[in-house]
Length: 134
Image 1 (cartoon, rainbow, N blue to C red):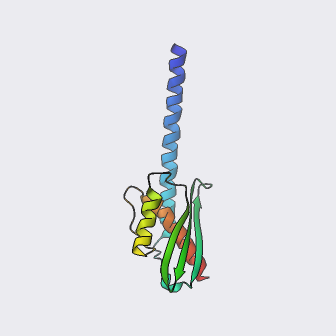
Image 2: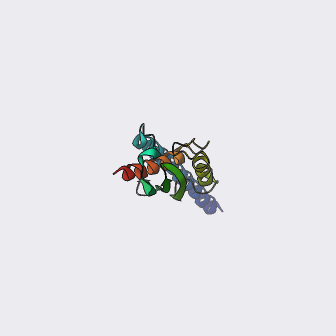
Image 3: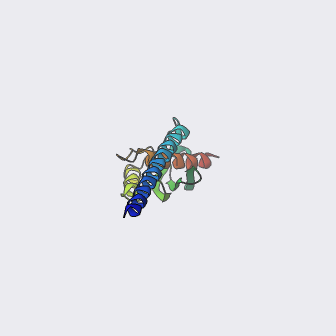
């Protein structure tokens, strides 16, 4: 019986360590994304008609985001999140897309409780826009 309790305690300690390490990594990834974005403000008027893809990945892909933008007549027609590894579930991707597609603005309002996920999306949008300008 004592051996079983020791094993359960060891498993609980390992779970706490893994979850804690995951939170630290996610926090650092979010701050890195915010730093990479800097003062970038996406402007669709500078883009020609077409589809633009961008991605943002950090920490060996543990935090990965891919976006695709469709621009027509200097206006955002559609934004799609092809991948958002940072926030599994919780409907965050749908909320972010709703903020972008409803407003038609790539400089979207962050979703409450998903600040870092929004930063990853912004970083991917930044890459798509910068590739489009080239």
